[in-house]
Length: 194
Image (tube, rainbow, N blue to C red; front, side, top):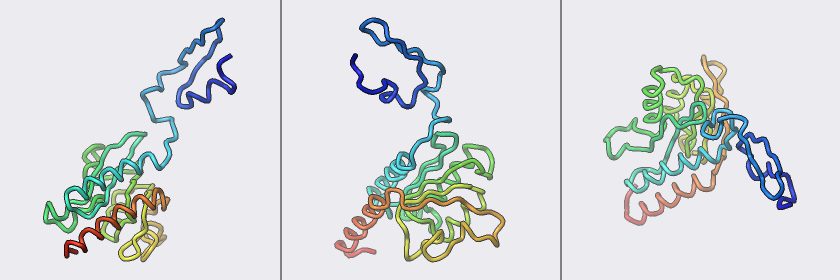
């Protein structure tokens, strides 16, 4: 026998019937879930890594490296990074651009079944847009002690006086998300910028 533990341990995302036939292992799929992530619990790190890739893209464009993705039913429907310098637009934060993309993707301003992943704690403007879009879940990486409106300075996403509140998860890949910002601003200061 080749396996000291259950062969299922090697294939946790698939639903198998397994039969041992002499020296061969025969797999038969019970369903077609192999290409469908709807029913699979994907860790927050997986989606945050995609947001971090957007932040890295921002850094390569000399933008403040913040990235965001919006996930619906196990797939990314929007991904964006800061573009304030490129667009000459103070509202061109990663979250704002991603929300616009997501509403276009679903054909509705309500993003009621979506999760927003963002590398930096949202500011007051982005938090307001999150509430207006009715996004129920927000996951962020690094805290923002200077402008954070989720936990640091304000708690807008959990303010019971407002007509919508969000489930918030913070600190996902915080070291990586904060590290890219620290490095970006260190380089900017060395160049005499920002």
